[in-house]
Length: 335
Image (tube, rainbow, N blue to C red; front, side, top):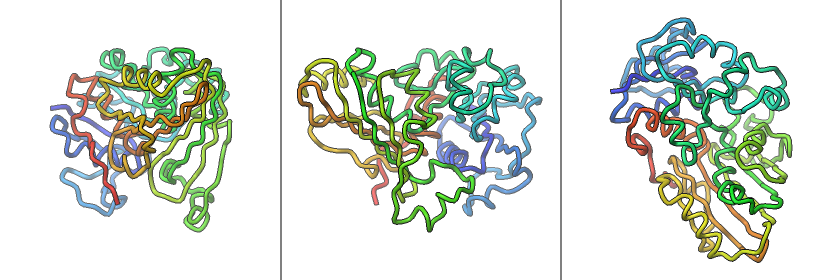
C-alpha cells in the first residue's frame, strides 16, 4: 500500500484528491496538510464525514515524512520557494500548482510576474501530461500537473501540432467557477456569476505558456467563465496547413490515443458536453466539420478531476507502477 499525503487539503482540488483517494485500492491517506488551516477537522471545510483521520496538520517542509508520495494542491507561486527542501526527501512529489510546469524562468516571469526561486529544478520536473509523457513520469521524482485549460486544449491539438498540421487556431474555452479556486474574487460571487457568462484574460491566460511548450502553433485563446460548478468545454476552430478529410484526421487521433484509457474520440458529429464527463477522469474529443483546410475540434473534461486531481492520481499510478485506471471514475454523473 502507498502512503500518500495531501498538502492543501482544504481547497477544492485538495478535497477532490481526498474524495478519490479514499477509495483507491492501493492507497492509504496518511496525512492531510495545510500551510494555514492546521489542527482543524476536515469536516469544517466539507461538511461531510470521511472514513479516516480528518485532522489537518501543519506542514513542515524540512521534515522527511514517512510517506511514499506527496500531492501538493496549493495556489501558484508558493511551492517553488520551498521545493529545494522537499526534493531532498525520500518521497516523490506531484505538484498541482503551476510552479514547475514551464521550462524556463523567462516564461515563468512573463506569465506569473515573479522570478522562479529555484530555476535549476525546472529541468528536473516532468510535465504531467500522462497520455504523452508516461515513460518519463514513471521515472520521475517531481511531476508538475498541467493546468485544466492546458490539459483539454493540448489533448485536442497536440496530435495535429506534432505533425505540423495547424497554421492557426482560435480556441474558445468555457469553464465552471470552481476552476478559480476558493480565493474570494468579486467575479466569482453568486450574484455576479449566476445567469452570466464573461470572457477573461483573452490571449493572456497563464495556461497559454503550457500550450507554447507542448503544442506550439499560432493561436488566439479566449477563456470564459460560465455559471456552473465544474467542467470545461474547449472548441478549437483550426486552419490546417494542408487539405484533409474527416477520415485522414480521424486516423491521426485514433493512432494517437489508441492506448489512452481516459481519452474517448468521436468523428461522427456527436458534440461532447460537460455532462458527458462530469465526475470522471475522461477527456471526450470530437472532430467536427472537416472541410479541406479547416476543422473544428471540441474537448470536454471535468476541470477538478481530469483537469486537476484525477490527472494527478493517474500520474501517481504511473509513477508507482499501478494500473493507470486505479481509483479513477470512468462513468459520468449525469444530472
